[in-house]
Structure formats: structure tokens, C-alpha cells
Length: 180
Image (cartoon, rainbow, N blue to C red; front, top):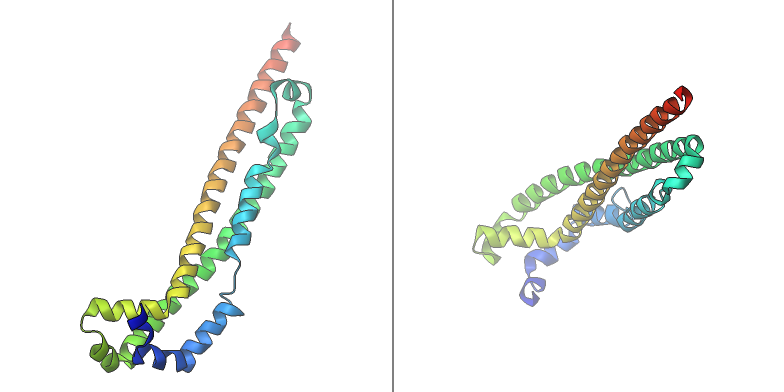
């Protein structure tokens, strides 16, 4: 990696105004997003759902209130998970487009310098990826948040079906008690 750091190509790219502007977007602009905060929030949403702690006797004694509360909480948590996913998805797509354009720009603007310093196409591509490494890392983190959002949304959807099945069974049970 020391050879890469001494590269004239890398020194030139680091001084490029377009690259400097892009890096500032990562620090204070649209790409300055705290993916770890979103991951912690998604984990917290998953762990703090009331439905996970319900016991059979509690449900039988307070079923109506508990099922309504669980359903409302489930909807609120699902909505928050979707909001997180939407924000990350929007930034992911912007970043994907930005990376494609920037990669093309670098490969074109510095084509001669890249050819002189890196003899293979793979080497040139790796040099450009090295320049944009922080952005690829962010892209990976955004994908992780979106994947975790999908897992939580799927689990919340399963919980909604479980709530519905529980309510249906309770209704049948109460109906039988009335008929006796």
C-alpha cells in the first residue's frame, strides 16, 4: 500500500477540486449520515416490542387492550423502519450515481497518468477505487442498514399476522363461551 500512497496519480487526484468537493459532501453534506445510529435504532425497535414479552395468562386477561397496543406499536415501528430504509435507499442511489460519474471522470481525466503508473486495467480500477474507498465503505454501510430494515419489517409483518391470528382465536373462544 505504501507504493500506492507515493503515486503521482493519487497526489494529483487529491488536489482535484471535484474530488475535494465530493469528500466534503461525505463530511458535512448529503453523504454525512450516521449509519451506526440507524443500526442501533433498528436493533432497539426490534428488542423493545411489547409483543415479545406477552405471556399467555396476560393475554387471556387483558386481550383487547394488549392486542390493540401491540398492533399500534407494530405499525409505528414498521413505519419508522420504512422511513429509515427510504432515507438510506435515496442516499444509496445518489451515491451509486455519483460514484459511477466520478469513476468515469477520473478514468478519463487521468487516463494517461493511470496508464503510466498502473500497467493493467485492474490496477487502474483499483487505484480509482482506492481514491473513492470512503464512498464505497459508506455504500456498504447503507446496504447493511437497508438489509436490517428489511429483516425488521419482515419480522413486524409476521407479528401483525400473529396478532391477527391471536385475535381470531380469542374471538372464537369468546363466541364459544357465549354459546354455553
